[in-house]
Length: 137
Image 1 (cartoon, rainbow, N blue to C red):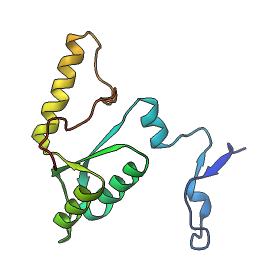
Image 2 (image 1 turned 180 degrees about the vertical axis):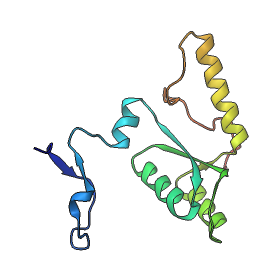
Image 3 (image 1 turned 90 degrees about the vertical axis):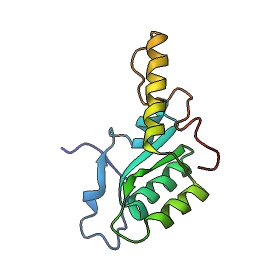
Image 4 (image 1 turned 90 degrees about the horizontal axis):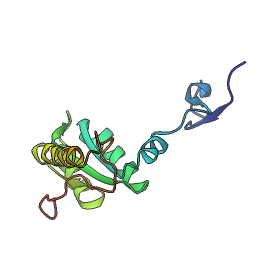
């Protein structure tokens, strides 16, 4: 027998195979996993600034995460890259360049090592990615 399932997303009327959207009940969501690690900030890098990145930024913001988008670590094949960055900056995200993110992570790791805390999992201990970045970025 199959484990009990719960639907996470489907537009049934358009989906010829609605069971492909089912997950085992025991499998949690990314939000649940992040909260279990006390993560409070999502730092985004990757492809399709005007599609995947912006959708994830709005989704994370709606779940009350602080959102950081790394503008020199995202890209897209369309002409809407800079427009998407401006929309996110104005609505849901702080833009922080990669060198600042790296410096911040190194600072947290160093502070954790000095305190004997060991590695920082997710840097989600009430800290904010991008601290010290110029206002309005």
